[in-house]
Image (cartoon, rainbow over all chains, first blue to last red):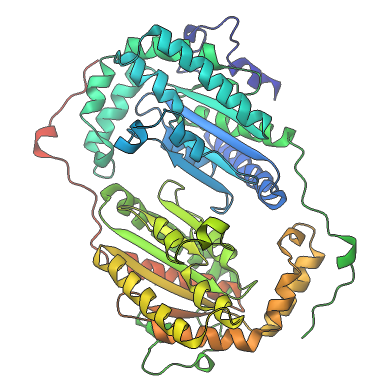
Length: 270
Length: 270
């Protein structure tokens, strides 16, 4: 699976242009094969997550970022489709509340960090505080640079305290977003996801692309790497996120706890 | 599905003896048919939960209680196997922390109550505070009676504020528990679930049965009914909880939000 490395952001030389949003090379070329592969990846992720939960020693944090309609919800649904609700936890970060705004921007995020045995998924994250906030000019360049450093410090602290961190940027093209927004409008089961404000944000696409490029480069570290996931194809996206997560889980020293000696031969009484 | 009513606790005449833990009458008699039925129930629950989430108006709370090994975890895994992690949330109540103990017993529970659009599952709950606490004599009869009233008041308040509440007691026999505890000891993937303290609790079985009987009778109300789920058969258990939950979701006025007039004909620009 070393081919996954090419999706990893190398902070020494990175440009978003290196990555094509419509790349589909993770797909097998056969729809049925792709579906089988996705199902087996989901099963394998569940198997590792079960041990993670049973062992209650390690912590895993998966951060998902991407433009509106990039498929954060859909990715979560597929990648964790075989997982026990007991072993995963989802934290969605929307516009901060007044109370959250009265604290530093990492305050609400820290509260949602995984504990031992947990796999936590961040649907958006503290990265919004160097993205939307930067694009709209609510922070200036020096403050943004300070936040990159603060985020790296924060994530290093989490890592040093036993958290494995994976960050995926779901990379779509403006043309794909157009189609997906239009689909939300025409599908009665998706209209609720449509927000006219998304159209305003869409106009800021180039500024967002720059903000993402800068943020990914500044915060892709050894302990908390960013991956750029070509996401115009939902299947390509789901395969890659599943494979990166599974590879990470497989590299961890996960083991079911061993039965203590004194329990051997123990018979339960009537 | 009116046959489900016979599992409902009627506070006017109730004895746990009316219910056989090894009752399997929810099963079809054919394993393959049972599996198909469970899968279709899971899909139907997911479909309703998707609307619940999209509409973001109603709240659902499913409370699961039962002796050790009664299958609370397994029930959650099966009943919600087709559900999107985005739409459900799980709250597990273990032994309270020092901080939680410094508050009233409903404090930590209230924090986990569902918000609009959420389906929350309580794996154990505030009922432990009239069960384990009563069995061990940490509260006396008058205090226990006060708590029944407080719990009914609390649940009525939740219901009056838009929460649909379903409570399921997973009913197993001591013989079935014996087998399951023994299995935990011998299966390397389940040893982590074994806790020698469970053997001490097992000795208190008759006291627990009485505590459950009293609690269920005292707190099965119109707005928050208890169901006794015969749970020696995992399939019987999963079928019943799925059916009761689905029936509840189907009785709710769930609708996808309608597209506002002003969005008609809206074209997304390039």
